[in-house]
Image 1: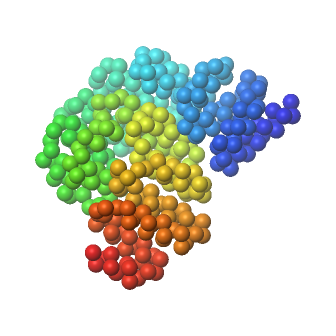
Image 2 (image 1 turned 30 degrees about the vertical axis):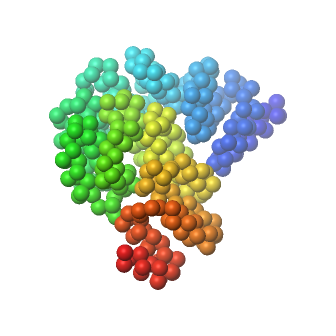
Image 3 (image 1 turned 120 degrees about the vertical axis):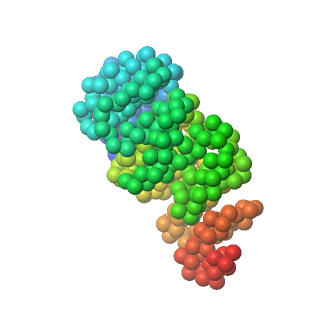
Length: 361
């Protein structure tokens, strides 16, 4: 039928152009092909996940006779895991094993997912049996953290202090573990050592909470005792790996799986916003950025700077600076970090007198 063929082709083109909403409209208009064309389900499911419709993607896989691709099996395993049915997850992971030779990431995802599921089934750390470098260390850190083992501190410190890359992100989870164990003195010592001028958003936000004595914020967003939180962090790591290779679509796929497991940890959406920005999808980047709110000052300021950057990229230079200035007025007690950033922004816009004023402050 030409109508279905035309809509399916349009869906693929829209998907390739990052117009995911339009792609889904075309997929839905050609769903007759779902039992006729083997690749239809894979493309459709992929678009649903990219749009954040994970439950609908799982439903489509379950109702289809064609589940013979990695993403379909992974979604089924995630569904049972999300329901804390670890026995069923184990069976579904066994079905996933047949795809482990499809590529490096498929093998890695299968092994680490299996490792975490075994932990939650048997309540003990098992040897992964593969050399995944720092990923082995990260996995052991979270697994020991889950069991509240006395080895947790050693594993996290080995990751954080590694000279083989930037693993400062894991300081956030280490701080969360210390707070759970009421080791507040160590938390304050670490906070004082954090330099916000060269720290990531997440670590800067952590320091901000500690200084404002909002320690309950850590457990609100992530807990080592929560199985879904831990697996969500693993999928964020996979997303980050794809993003570092400029494979933004794959990165967004796994990032949405991470958000499905732990929607509370909305800070990870900053990677989604960056992916869209780097892939020239500025409107979607701006849409994601608007999820950040003033309750978390560091991310609110990040949103302001990034939207201004988008406006600048859209050749709205005057509007870009005006946007930042208006948002800055609403900040009651701007931190030194924000004042320093504003000085840099004025300098970049060649407003040198204003830059000097804020550098002086």
